[in-house]
Length: 299
Ligand SMILES: [Zn+2]
Ligand SMILES: [Zn+2]
Image 1 (cartoon, rainbow, N blue to C red):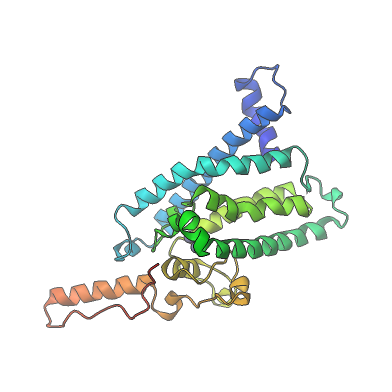
Image 2 (cartoon, helix red, strand yellow; image 1 turned 120 degrees about the vertical axis):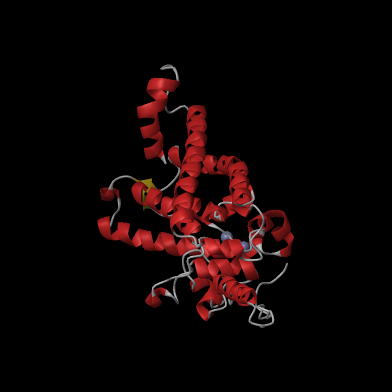
């Protein structure tokens, strides 16, 4: 984050905002700047990628699903706008520790004893580490003592849109991002790799809420995609994972997505539409019950 902070100081804060007497390495100035950067960066990532996804990937017919709430998109956005600043406060404190030199982040490959090999391995180890911790943190958030207070706001959306991706109680959102902050304090990581992976997880979080259930066949058993996460919103106790299905399989919470079996929310909407058009055609068909007993689970 110090790369971003230095750039913001160089191009904006130092020439245009702060008096020359306020040193760039003053801790209070760094805290204020990091808070501004975290908020603006968070909103920018969220609105840019969620909007792109909403218009170009998200299947809008999902909005006809009976569990899609009234004004849901507006509510998801408003909720996120309200909570992001709160989420950014503890996040800023961790970024501050990192900027003050307490992390194991490096900006030169030469600083890694095993050079490029170590850098490549660090990407995989970062993904493994964060995927594991997010699984257990998310699963912990479903514990009855925590669920109602912290995690329930994210489960209001049974059929989420990309805009639900960051709609969390602030503490819930922060806890689920914690593995990303812990890693560079424990293991060496390149700063650019870190920023790249941080942006990537934000995009990924949006993508698993987009209702695009397609995954390349060879990746289907491995990747925790939108099909898995949509089922998590519908059925609660399954598919807690982030990138991969590994920890759900180890933890016994893996569920083959309903949309892979032709029983997903999109299939439901399609059936519903077919039923409707049959009824309108007046062909005498009785309206069949669409629910097959596995439509969703109530809390
Ligand atoms: Zn959950
Ligand atoms: Zn979600």
